[in-house]
Amino acid sequence: MVTSTRVYVARIAGLTIFDPNGDQVGRVRDAVARMRDTRPPRVVGLVVEMPMRRRIFLPIGRVVAIDADAVVLGTGTISLRRFEKRANELLVLEDLLDRQVTIVDSGTPATVVDVAMESDRTGDWSLSRVAVREQTGRLTRRGHLHQLNWSEVSGLVGAPDAQGTASLLAVLEDLRPADLANALQDLPDNRRNEVAAALDDERLADVLSELPEHDQVEILAALDRDRAADVLEEMDPDDAADLLAELPKPDQEELLDLMEPDEALPVRALLAYLPGTAGSLMTSEPVILTPDSTVAEALARVREPQLHPAVAAQVFVARAPMATPTGRFLGVVHFQRLLREPPSAMLGGIVDKGIDPLEPSTPLAEITQRMATYNLVAIAVVDEMDRLVGAVTVDDLLDHLLPRDWRDRENAEPIMTMAAAAGSATGTSGKLPTSGKVPGRD
Image (cartoon, rainbow, N blue to C red; front, side, top):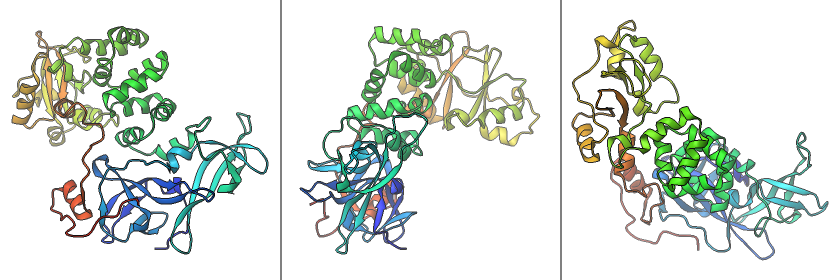
């Protein structure tokens, strides 16, 4: 593996980091640089995302190789203390990408699209080059791209007058919603709101579902009301109801009135149930088919890519209509049973009626006990007329069993070897360092 002496940071974002044994440590999310008086900032390390969304600081001296596919470490012992940005430090992607700057020689305004870090003969890294694109003022024409020395660009340091989102979104576009939500939590509030607002409605809806409640509310409040209603329409009804439940009643009603009636109706129904009951936890849009539907039709439905795995694990069978509340609930057909039956078989002939459904008022403790007893990933919820009104899935249940702030950053700061880190993620054992101090950023 050949180590590059000049690396553009946006191009290594997301690369896998390996220890000397070839085990995966995490992924690169940013580079940390320390400001100096007259010289370009010195790169002191990388921000690395570990399993369970923990972000740590990795000293640049631990890196022995960087190429287009991976970053390799020279040691397996690192600090797992959660990363916190210090005074006089900047994060390359967070602080510099999309920044409005000026090309010194020509006075031309430009936008930062990437920043290169470069290693000298002593092994020290610094921010040497800046890729900027001229601002043309024309919507249909892109400005020229320049690669300049750090000193040839002004406006890189200090609070920006304006900072766009296009380049940062390009770096983040391949992240899963949960990982993107985690990245947003690392940004300052105003920057987080700008980046969130730049996402399309569907993507933002997915990301909001993965954020802590207070961040959801702040991002939604930063949007104009029509846009907020559009995003709520893209969310699953149960997630939209959970978010609206965090808002004052007048704001709830205003947003519900702005939503399309067909989209607002199931959300209103979920908000009517008492917190901590099956009605408040359930999704109102499980996979529902009539008893005369075939196995082939059921398999086609559960293959739909937008379905969550817990929702796609079974088909609920009910009399028409198939939208909740349905006709009389008949039972459930699990995915494994569908795989064992001929495609032409009718669901009514293979339906499982052995597990009683929940009532909307069933409390959380009873739901947990029932699902654990029968090893279920979802269970039906029916009303007093025996109509299916929804289903509680295991992910709905976990969201309400975990502490309310479980999506927030952890405060623990353990230090262990990479073997121990891997052990904590996989259930295998690992060893703490027996001697020596794990280097930090000083």
